Amino acid sequence: MPASSMDGQQIKPPQSKNTQSRTISMTSSGDDWLDDTWEAYDRDNVIAPKVWTTSEPGEKEIITPPFPILQALDFTDAEIPPRPWIVPGLLMRGAMTLLVGTGGAGKSLFSLQISLAISAGQDFGGFSPRRQARVLVINQEDDAVEQRRRLAAIRQKMAITASQVEDRLLIPRETQDIIATVTDPKTKTQHISEVVRKLALYIQDNQIDVIVIDPLAETMQGSENDVEGVRGAMRIWRDSIAKACNCAVLLVHHTSKASSANAAGDANAARGSTAINAAVRSSWTVFPMSEDDAMALNIDIEDRHQYLRVDDAKANYGLLSGTARWFQKHEVQLENGSDDISGDKVGVLMPWTPPGAFDGIGTDTIKALIKEIAEAFTDGKPFKYGQGISRGTDRALIDLVMLKAKVEEQKAERMIKAWLKSGVLTKEQYHDDDARRSRKGINGKIGLVS
Image (cartoon, one colour):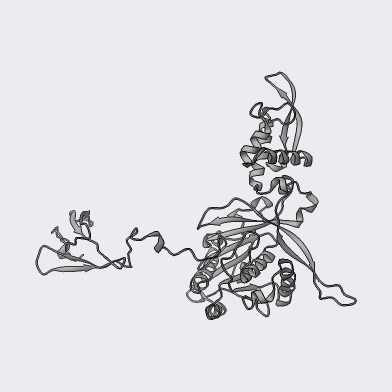
């Protein structure tokens, strides 16, 4: 405010029957308190410039906000546009999603298969696109021939035809080296690279809905641990591609060496600076089935390499599900051989449901159950199972499983029998201090709770 209005005079705004006036107080360093009365009035949902007048005739001041201001609750639910999800929970226009996985886990294959599913408008393992969309997959490690080799197997297994997809799935003719930023040698500031600038124009001109960058690390100018370099690259993918082009960006990235199979669903599993995960709105992990997972789901340890899990690790626009989506690896032989050379064998992922006893039950729930059973045995108060054990009494194991897994008695029985058969649960001797004698109780395998 000008000095003339900071002399302690009362400031009186024009009155309006649609708004209420209130008195506020503020101070300037060294000045006396100033009592101001102000009034805000709405024009098309934006606060219009405020007109202030002093008690001295002829003086006025126009005060405008530095940016448009909205009245926060001046709307109805119907006026709020729905979030622009392309695949709810996974890909949204104007936002980036991070897909993190260990080397060879299947993250590139998964990203290619979800891309084909989106272009065909088809569900894939519970990921359901709202409608068909155009997808550009830029794989900086596999050329177009290898990509087509994979796609030949994928479309065969997923039963998707070229006529369904038409021109909605695109790949570069050759592998591309795409560095997102260039650094000014004088100012050391980062700017969008020429190749990404041209890519943005192509995306806009061809109405690309989803772009897949695989792997993310190849687009960075320096180390993945260089915070400023990482922030610059992530800013380019977010602001110059996702937001400016109104598309979803899927960034495929590796896990850190320290990450283990138990890092499934861990947002911090990504390799490099934490600025990578901080920049995205959602992230997912891809991990092979661990030994613990195999035992909990009653899968032969020798066969666990055939399965992988996809878990949500960060969800800014909703709640984490806490449930893994499972896929099984299948092998497809292509008809590209000759008389003396067999056709190529290519791996493909297909949605997989755990065996009947464990259908619909997350591995986290199972592990928590086994942990509680093992701890109870260690404390000398184990759960019990078998003939002579009554429901609701004597720490019946069946009651625990029904409660924690939220299943009916029949399914709980199948789960317990499967665990006993596989060795996840064992009947062992313990000393009952109350009865002063040895009895048998149920123990859980330590490997599942470490």
